[in-house]
Image 1 (cartoon, rainbow over the protein chains, first blue to last red):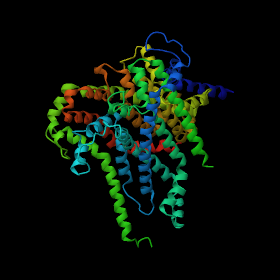
Image 2 (cartoon, rainbow over the protein chains, first blue to last red):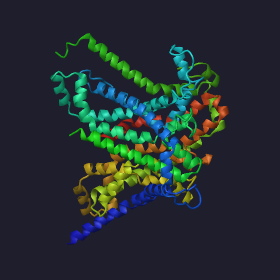
Image 3 (tube, rainbow over the protein chains, first blue to last red):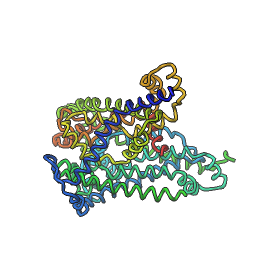
Length: 300
Length: 281
């Protein structure tokens, strides 16, 4: 009996331990999410009392051509980025996990490949904005010196190149991260599988498609989903490269969160911005569920 | 049999290394060009590129700091990122420890809520967060950049698993029989044991806070209070500075170098923390 009451008191100590977390979490995480939801049903302008207007903001989002253009811009930039990013990461994983070549220097290469991911997006955006400058940027100067182009290319000023270059900058920032995660996954696979495959005479491609990919499926899913959730919220790099929420050139760099920022913090249509945030969340939710269902199922 | 390799094998091995090195150069070259151009004059930069530093470092420094005091931003970033990292480390550890080692009502619910909030995109709360800060008169204050660090669901999630795998209940019982208080047990037994996990998470937290842009952008509009990334973006508007690209490169270099130093000392921890992120799923 005595030890029982003692144990209860003991467990009450846990409440004291979690109180700071719970209070701050409720105030700064849960409340803002619910407050955004509430504001999305109002015509709040950033001051005064919010007026309830029902689903009007959401109806407006769904019929807002520019919201969907910014959504497609975001998907396009993310899509090009994920192909390059995952493609490079996979290639590196294959090279380093090949038991015949036994490549050395994994820890050094891994560290160097991860370097771009550590730098703030602001610095990266500034750096590339300056390096890719139409007239004076070092990249055009190098390309002209080795004869790849005769006239400087306006990388960030044309609708045809700006989204692709932005995507490549994102891929440059993130391929090392994906490579580290995939490589950690491969190192978790028993070497026996690879040796058995090698003894059976399986080629590199067969080993990759029949052993590496199926065993890595949960990790690939993790990389893909986190990249998608992060990618749909893309803001810093396109915002800084185009120099504002308009998404220059010709709005081709305007992402959903830039569009949200424009209404929430520039034109003070806060209620509408909140509805954009929740619409984006619903889209992310639906895509994540579909991904988990399709990629998760093939396992069985 | 393994020794009798064809010459093609060696050529292919060399080609693979060439590929790896080219990719590594692609990661390093932009930073190298940044350092080189930070020491060249605007005229030199507009004329041609170079892989070797120039002699204009002092002038670029003068031009840059004549426009903006980046050390102020550096200082502000430290004032925000260091306390936020400490708060995240300490309070995530104590919350994770309580959730892993005690049976209390609501424990499972707390865990479920944490998992749900890990999946919710951050931008979802941006509007409500700013609205809250306005109501609390905390715009232009560091409080909303530091205090929310106490509640980091992702870190609690990771450390909870870390506590479960590295701490045994019998050790805690032994300490209790010796008469140690619960808080003392946490400070003198639990923290030393789980400190590798806390350290790994803290590096990520620090870099995340240091690089954070959107939240300080919406909250801070007093130039004296701006953190480094926000201050750096004010260079965008400095048209006379745009003529001297060397100064712009120098500004970017000053913002990058602290992180490069952290990376040189902690790259192992950083890489193991990312690997942990993928494998835990």
